[in-house]
Image: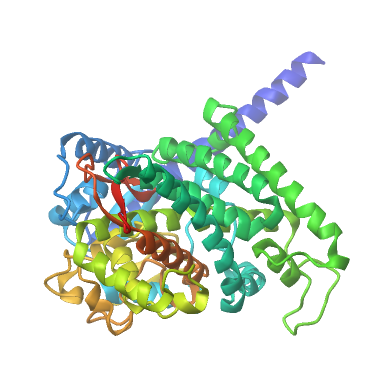
Length: 523
């Protein structure tokens, strides 16, 4: 009996090996050749495809070389492309635009013109879906609103919309201010112990901690301590994503118990356990309401139909609710903390704008803690935040893929080809933003986003079109409240220790932090 069983097992292994071979040849050799030929026939070029690895090895080498070779930039040099996206810069110079490159075996076309980008992002027919997320990114963000498509996206968006309505955000502004007060008091105490009255503070780290506190309290209310556990777990997953994003991804590899996979599974389980412990008691207390934080508002929407009637069944499954929590938690602290960091950097660099904003804050808010209504009147603050997002937006690229063969202008794009939108390149397009595109000039937004450039709605930091970021009002309100409170209390300059080295850590960050010298205004 043993021999037939062994023969059957051997036959199954042979079949599996044959399938894997056919799959590997089709996916990693034949399809790349075919797709490459389609684009070459249209005059689109790019780096050569390398079996299994695609362009990943080239990207890794160019990034490492850029980090090693590039000296720190002058603080007023805002053209950091050679540091953070050196591969796109080199390939665009060599091959022109658009260009074709490879993420492993996946073809990706990189767009550098606004017209093509607008066609992709404004498409309302669902022809351009989100690309399949890397396993580490999926573990970090969950398959929430940022990554779902089609009918699932419509369902998720309907549930999330009420939580980000402006009347709800105004209530949350009080929580934002309360959290900011702690940072202000800490800085005041540090300054009081200094003979000069000045104190150096590393704001990049402080802003990360502060925005984690804000999202923990606004998202999870009384469960904010558990929310901060989610923050620490996501930081570990972010580090893992950074380490593995360009690694070779073989079929089935994500299921093998490698060291990185085991760590990822452990962190995913920990985050799911924490979030489940927060969500389950809310679901059990529906008779007394779900709470007025982001989670409570989302759960309320889960039990409400599109017509506003109550329903017994959840609009989202438990796993989908957990994924939404992952998404708005990560986006709510990671991107906002870097927006605050780069705003602080630019206001330190341009004291005339720091003073203009301080005068505006004192005029509209006085010395009192700002309210949402006060913050809505800060026009120049809005201009500075938008210009910061243009020059130092946290998100560097956006990804889409056509669900069928599509045309973008004269360009024919095969189904499944990744479309990558390199935001910093577009934000420095002099034909769109003018000859001063590399300079800090908040006045370009004096008449709003629509009229800031020659192309309407050219600012891509929150995306544009039907899938623009649902949390943009939350982020802007939080940034305004924190910056207003700092401007009320302190003047500030860059520390001599600051080294201007923007770096790509999935989001755009200052490599060596942001040391700032604070001076209380009453000193």
